[in-house]
Length: 389
Image (cartoon, helix red, strand yellow):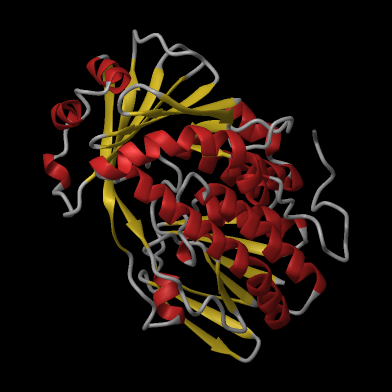
């Protein structure tokens, strides 16, 4: 089976690994010269995403590219502790959340895909796709064309594949938050803890890296879409000057990363045709720290479906297995965003209720997400590759 993957980010690289594991001939086409690069801030992989990496044989490689973060603490703008829980896993789960730069994750998955036999072609932007019988032909802006049995759109929230698949597909819209991030030095932060402060100006995340640096990200609430040229360190410092730890981290900042707007995408009605399918953010950006993990899950479910069915039937199985889970994750992510943009009255109510809710309901309320094993429920019960853990 010949497969064209559009996009060399997390979804595309994970998809290439999974498809090579089932013996497909895979070529990844990426618009940018460097599919990894220092794009975006750090991200975390929860237990469900780590189980997926284990099924792909990539878990140890990714762990080495980042560091484990066993716990998560949520803080009010006043400095009150709202919750202290295991990070991205149920209590007792040995798969501790891994935090790393997005570029390092892409590099690790891309290298594994190439080792597995996938081809990577850069500098090619998809502009068209035509299906003729059992073949799909991809057309690129350079004039290059390529044919395959399946085209996988893994080209992110601004997906060209999605628009080709359905010209009436909804467009991304601004989510009311912009993100700025960087590194600080000289701040005393407990290692192994992912801290999130629900500040007056938005959420602020900080954690200690193994080398003693503090990685931080400010998710600034702004109802109107800001001009990113106006978002600088001075502005972010002013927004968080009343929150003790965010103010201390920002005062010690030694590195500033390019700010980005955060977007949401309404539900996509068309995920597939008989020969084309969307995976990852191209079909369902979820946010809430689950984007990479959900993309990895997608890759495995798609590969499993193709292992057991012909292409059109496999794509139907893939959609059936992913739609409900993704929809539930999108709903959870929406509540997550609302908490980061809450006004004064909502913040006060949250500060009263959340400590009790976290103790009583957090683990039960997140078990559907973190305990999910994407490799279960298939006729072929073997992993895509033997476990390396």
